View (cartoon, rainbow, N blue to C red):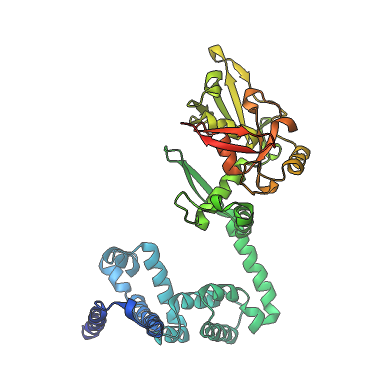
Length: 411
């Protein structure tokens, strides 16, 4: 009972010390004082974490007393923490019992909790054939690297190849095994989910192998490159710069909409395209809507815009719902035509826009969805923003003698 009271008294002292400075405004501290405070608090947090983990590792009886699997389950409920977090803490607490030097470094404030997690994880992942002496050398080496300004992320990467440093003769084989295991695990856990929220947006999440994520990010960063966009495209309506997440989202939309139709996979001989159904009246109307083959809806203007380049086939219906047009094979501009448009237009043909040809869409002046031809005389380059305006019923596009265009908002 005395030991337990000592821990509680320690926690009370910490709470009292925090309360003693809670009223102080850190904004008025000098820069050097803020630096000192942040480092001192980080060290204090490490010491407190070490103490809490030590108690948690010795608390199996708490779980038993409440009929639970372990103390982590009890702590999650009583402290309103997530079970995932408390289980991770319990795993670290038990590992630190086997790695006294790492526990001591954490308790001294020299090591951060995530660094400790990376070190013990790397050492425990070493092959069983590795000797105790080599394990200790690996642990001490990583402790030294942690003290030399390597964070937890660095240590996880270093840990995968630590044997290259302490035991080169087995390091290469170990790294190959770890990479093979990672790749197999990544392939087995690939997942994607998409959910339409019923308000015109689709939300999703995915898990893919790291190299696939890197490839996708590289593609989207290239599309979001500020050099491809005007300042107007890079700022919101209030003039503030769009955050990277917003620009990557817009790049992802462009990535999907402009995916080459001739490269889409086929099922039963049909490309993976989206079919938009509308009547002739809806196709010509400024305020009409169109029906997608999955039951969702979009404006006719958006359907006309997508018909220029995206994997969308307009299914135009006449009377008695008879299909009049299920798409023409020459709907999209060919690569040669795109090159020719680039040589002629040099970039977006909207006045005042300096988007280069590589960042533009090919637009039909006489809409393809209204039987306009896919040829150079009926085509022009427009950046994504001006392409949307060209199909926006709220705006009227005027073509000038020099082949440039301007937009005027309809009254």
